[in-house]
Image (cartoon, rainbow, N blue to C red; front, side):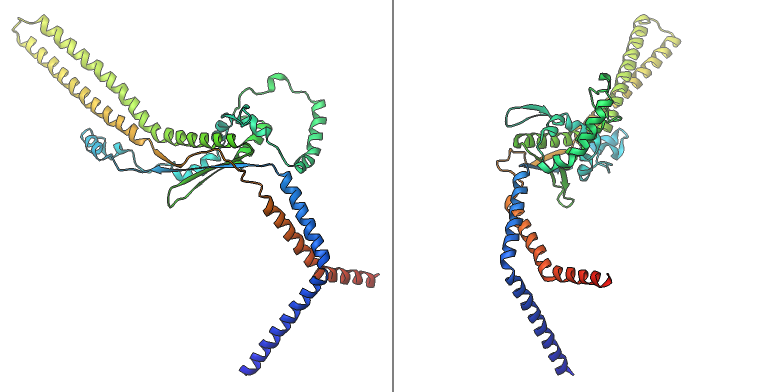
Amino acid sequence: METMNNKQLEEDKAINEIDLIILFRKLFHFRKKLLKIIGLGGLIGLIIGISLPKTYKVEVILSPESGVNVTNGLSGIASMFGLGNSATGFGEDALNFNMFPEIVKTNPFILEMLQTPIKTQNKEKYILYDYLNSEKKPWWSYIMEAPNMAINGIMSLFKKAPIDSIPQTIDPFHLTPEQVERIGMLKKVLKVETDKKTNMTKVSISLQDPLTAAIVADSAVHKLQEYITDYRTRKAKQDYDFQLSLCEQYRKEDFDAQQKYAKFADANRNVILQAVTSEKDRLQKNLSLAEQIYSQSMGQLQVLRGKVQEAKPVFAVVEPATVPLAPASPKKMLIIIAFAFLAFVLESAWILFGKDIYHDFKNELKKKD
């Protein structure tokens, strides 16, 4: 039984080898045609590679520094004033560094980025909103957009927008089609990736001008830092401002208590009456209480001031933005090889299988007729 199975396997293997040899001979027979098709595919790849505009990519790598927990000292001080562990300010946040990719996709962040002033290598100055419209496109994009441009041009002849309808500033609540297009353009070229294991964040931008790409990448990093810093410190600042207003109020109450006690003591310096003594004691107790409340309030203010500082995240820029010297794309050689290989595969499939299938289908149609 095993001998028969081995023989069958050997026969199948021999048949497969024969089939492969037949297919190879068939391709070899049409080798001149294949070479022409490969050359044609490579030529198409070359045309596409030349037509694609050069783009420069800038990457900035940054890492949030967790650092040493310096809140132990403040925790002890905070417990003295009844603030508990909340004074540390290091609880779970709704916004963390892993959300950088999502922050960059939001319209408020993108709209703020579009207002970034930039400068090209030709020393031309724009804002990013205007620069994106000046980037070149491959020639086939203009052919595909021609029908829409023609339709819009004809419609503009019959519809004239008043001057007041042109927005001077971008209103996030009412975006125009042009503004939506610019937002989409920036979202395509600005990418942020975060490695959850290492907490390393990579910000990358691809633009046709190398200097502009470096400026935009650096601006994106700074805006991300400002965004997360503002979020982390907002609650602490609100607490600090509220406590500062309380301190001012307690300071006035302490000052008023001092004035009342001093005036009463001066007015009744040589008076020895029980009513005067009782009133003097009462004013002195009010003064002591006001001083104690003011002193405790100032202690809480110092703790909250430390919270504001501790809440600020620290970023270490591992790889800063630099102006690239060489374009990142298009990779012309890869495009040429890819199109040449695709042409080879398609033509080989047609020679080996496509012709036979086509002739069989054609013969079946003739028989039916």
